Image 1 (cartoon, each protein chain N blue to C red):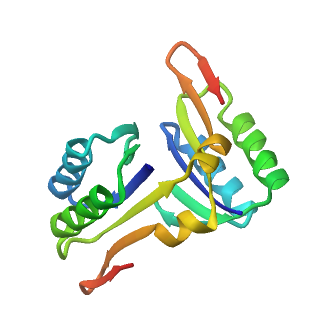
Image 2 (image 1 turned 90 degrees about the vertical axis):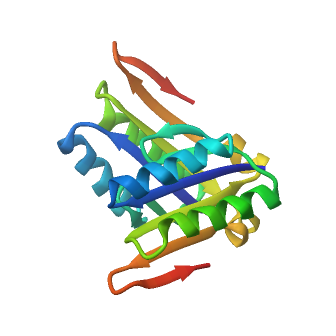
Length: 89
Length: 89
């Protein structure tokens, strides 16, 4: 199931570890602190536990949100890239 | 339907306008650049158009993601707040 992970982490070292963990689970970075990718229930729970351990007692917020196919179809993304290339789908 | 909005906007002035627009539509800020709240289809589309106008040709990425009740139940949030208060639901 597609899964979105977003986070607000103050400590740079912790934030980098969270970022690496998301990459380890095959998620793609779509925004600075937002990743998205396909995870089954077990892998999602594994990642949740790993992120929980990494965060430990450091200030921060992590959201792990599964996105069903119907929601995925309704999802909109607006992107303006260098050179003024506009994506609005 | 619950809706998540996340954004990466370089320009502070544009980012603040995007933030204000999300508040205008009754969304709650759950992370620095992530809002969540209930929007019907029309309001979600209205907000999308408004965010699109605000962003204009400025560099940035905006994700607008509806979240159905089932996904909402599966959503996890890990929060560590000042004083070491840990929320993991």
